[in-house]
Amino acid sequence: MTLDLFAHDAHDPRDPHATSGERGISSDELAPGAFVLRGYARTAVAALQSDIDAIVAQAPLRHWLTPGGKRMSVAMTNCGEVGWISDRMGYRYGSHDPLSGREWPAMPASFVTLACEAAQAAGYDNFKPDACLINRYSLDARLTLHQDRDEREMGAPIVSVSLGLPAIFLWGGLQRSDRTRKVRLEPGDVVVWGGPSRLVYHGIASVEGSFDANAVRYNLTFRQAR
Ligand code: MD6
Ligand code: FE
Image (cartoon, helix red, strand yellow):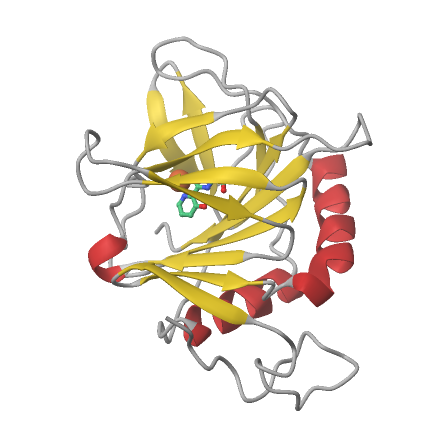
C-alpha cells in the first residue's frame, strides 16, 4: 500500500511545499496501524545525529542489565521528561538518569516536531511524546523479540527513526511464537505503530556492516510513556 503522506513537510528546507511523492517518500503498511515511512527523515539525519551527540555528552550511552542479569548488547540513553531504564529490579520509566542522578536531557524541539509529524502522517493525531529512547547498535548488537508494554498510554503509537547503518528489523505478531518477517530499515526510515499493532512482537536481527569499521546504527523511539 502507498499512502499519500504530507502535502507539505517542514523537514525539507529546499521546498517546504513539495509533496511526499515529489520527495520520493512511500509507505508500507506492515499490519493494521503500523507503517514504514520510507525515507521520511532523510533530510533530517545529519541534524538528528548532532543532537544525539549533544545528548550523549550529557547522558552517556550505557549497556543496561536485564532483570535476569544479562548485559544488553545495545547501548542506550534517553532524552525527554522520562527515560526507559532496565536493571535487576525490572524495566520501567524514570525521570532521572541512574548513572548521574540528574534529570534526562530535554527532548530537542526538532525531535518532537519530527515525531509528531510522522505520527500524523500515519494517521495518529495528538501524539505527545514524553520519552525518547536512543539506541546504539554496533555490528554485533541484537535486540531480541519483545513487546513495548512499559508505557502507560497504550492508545498512543510509537515512532521509531533509523539512522546510520541499515538493519534487519523483525516484525512478528501478538504472540511471541507468531511467524516473523524481515524488514530492512535504512537511515531516514521511520516506523510508526499503534492501534491494533501496538503490542506486536518485534526486534532487531542484525545490523549490516559497511566499509567503515567504526560505523554504527542509531535508533530513536518516541513514546508517550506517562
Ligand atoms: C530498533 N526498535 O529499531 C528497535 N519498539 O532499533 C524497537 O524496539 C521499537 O522500532 C517499538 C516501536 C518501534 C520500534
Ligand atoms: Fe521495541
